[in-house]
Image (tube, rainbow, N blue to C red; front, side, top):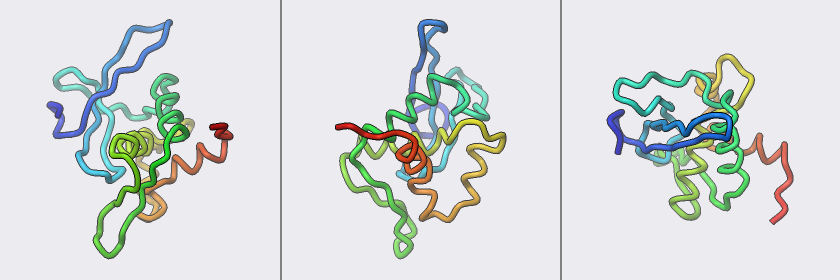
Length: 132
């Protein structure tokens, strides 16, 4: 858990910057939640996909993944097919959103729950070819 109401933590970095830790809110398979700075009182990261390290994590989490996330309207919940860890990474990618949009990831809330379940993953699958 985290001090930010459930969820988990991720740490990303590159040779040009030190390792940075973030918290991810949410504790279900719903692609709802935010990325925050990990320190106590950490602020919400408004555009996480605009940070290269976080963006690359989202792309890899989408493409190197055999799970599926769908919305079940009868049960009013998101359902997973596949390994829990892979689904959690898929949900993380959805929470990160897409780069280059000022309204991202809040714009994703305008989608239907069925569309929202895999919107970002579907985008990345259209941008890159999976080899294996």
